[in-house]
Image (cartoon, rainbow, N blue to C red):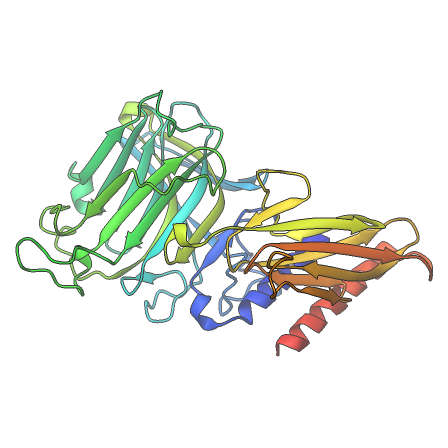
Length: 410
């Protein structure tokens, strides 16, 4: 119950934010779900867009057996096929609106955008894990950054469904050396796919057009460790006009300027036609991945038992620290020891104490929410007196906190 209400708080705050960020979304699947129930109007509203808890749709394109589930806080995609030499399954964020002028799931060529995810290979040395961008389900068009677990190969591919069915696809690739520090740890590594509209300053053939989507760049990277351990170097880079990739443009669809990102599990005849991968800490966002420096949230307790945080993103240092992308909204809720009752939140930051702008803020709401625009230290303080707060009463306080938040925002 506590976690569900925290999710509701964060989503309400996100919805009240500026419309310009509505296309960004994050999900670490800690709520145990990948989608809302479209048959229950009490928890599903297709007119609402929740960037902090998006609605995922599973689409098995080529399969005889398919599974999408949340398993221990990450999204599992399993697909296999006994009728065709390929299997292909996709999970994408869906708000039931495919108008590129209004939909939050579509990204156009007006600005850079990226998709990043932690990836787990559930069956060692089998199948392919991929990130997909600029997808068009109606025409079966997309760009894909792939890691082939069965032969340790990185690929960048442009796919057209009809041509793909006849064995045609354009691609560049790089075989991974087991001694390379980027060599994926199959229990968890990172994949990044970046669209960059800043193409070359001029085309060597004299035909550069800044409004032509085929002038733009696709870049990708893979690394181990933490989300922000990336060294800033891309592993594969493609300029769609200078590299003549794919030849003649995207199979005749050069004017396609929008599309959705997605997560992919797939397989082929060479690797048992099985794709079984996990995805976690997914982030799809406008801008460049490297420009969003992560910020640290440090939690402290004074006569409190625990602080519940949503989303709960671990910090490499562990312990009382959490690490969040710049701009993410975080909600905190505390439980007190014994008969003590909640007193206040003390928020220090986001600047260093030596900075003239350093600030200390006190908030007595039961639920605290922060926009991570810097490093923060948050302390939950409880006090004696008045008797203990029973769990049901604590939930009432939590609901009141939500009301106060929404009232202040509106």
